[in-house]
Image (cartoon, rainbow, N blue to C red; front, side, top):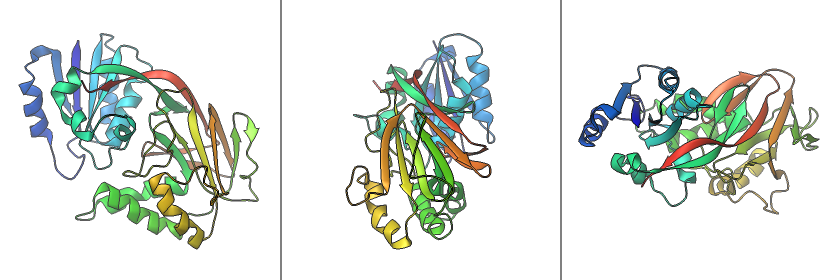
Length: 303
């Protein structure tokens, strides 16, 4: 079996390319291993697709953050000959938090990764785009859009960058005009007369550097967890924020403006094209429809 390592040298605060090259070489796997170093946005997706198209059985490891993982996922989605591994050297690394029983260090142990077992998980799909973790629209999408600005500041970690972006967007991105259908049923809390603070669909549980937005989501149950939050005042938002970060906002009687449903499809309508956040990657879409695709990705669990 081929083992393909795609390394993003721009992931995280420090370039770890040489460290990873050394670890890969120490595996002693010879011609079974191929290493690619990306040079820009979108290249990990192109490399992953080109490898997947060869048709042989392979494992492709995304060495980077959640953005690198999403690019590799986009390249191999639909190719049954590929399993995907994540080597989390980025700033957020949120997806692996949902893989119960494992720590970040487990995924950084390359020997354990190449010996690991495959696990089938679900995917989120919208207009030919894929996510394995979380999609969002509204406030959270705006936050994700601004995060890169704050990550560039010295001494600012991925987690801190998300929190800084939350404060920034608090005063500019709290009201969004949307209509929402959940498995074909109109959500009355969201229409053009009322406004939406945020809406997310979770396959994984965490995003934003450890925010537990979809606390009950399961990677392989064939459903996504949909959470909708109506627009609220700044003070009400601040009272919710701490609970939201900890995952204590769902089914909480203190927050009747937070709605939770498990479903297979979410459909949005808006008066203009809207930003959709897929695992930290932002796409502009018109009236997006998000579907869950059960058991459609082989993910590697460390041995």
